[in-house]
Length: 234
Image (cartoon, rainbow, N blue to C red; front, top):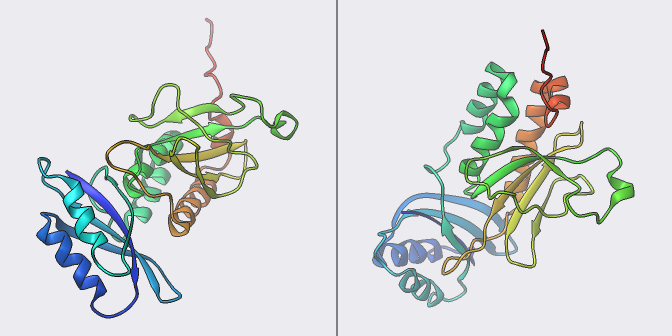
C-alpha cells in the first residue's frame, strides 16, 4: 500500500540520509520526498512510500524514533499516485474544459492531490453569522466518493482558509470560494493503528490557490451549487 510519512528532522547534512536509510531497511520503498518547511534549523518532510501490506508499521516508527532529533508527525494511507509538478494546472484545465461539472471535478480530485481521505463542497447560508453554533449550518453541494454519509464537518465559519483538527482527531483543511457561501472541505480521518498528520500551512495554501482559481474559472456557476434542479412540466 501507499503510505505518507511526515517527519520533522534537524536541517543538517546527513539527517535526511539517515531517515531514508531507516525507511529502506524497514521495508519501505521511497517514491517521493516533499519538503514542506525549513525553518529555525528544522525541516518538515513528507515521504511517500510503497509499504508491504503484511509488514508492521511499528518497526518503521521505532527505527525513525531512534534517530537523534527526528520526530514522526504522522503516518497514513495515501490515495492515488504521488503528486507531480503540473497536476494543479492540469486539474484547473479540466475544470475550464467542463465548467458544468467544475466543482465536482475539484472535489473529486483534491483528496488525491493532498493525500486526504475525502472532500466535500459545503454551502453555508448567507445568514451564517446569526446562526453561529447551529448544528448542520452547512449543506452539502457535492461529496467525493469516499466521503461518509452524512459527512462529518467541522465548524467552517468564519469562511477563511485554515486547518482544523476535531476533538476526535480528524484533520480538515477548508478554503472558501468567495461567493455563494461555498467552501471546499478536505479531510484526513483518524484511524488506528495509523495516525495522519494535520494539514500543513503549505497544503492549506495550495488548496486555497486551487479554490480561488476555480472560482475565477466558474464564476456565476458557483451560485448553482446545492440548488435543486428546475424541472419543466409540459
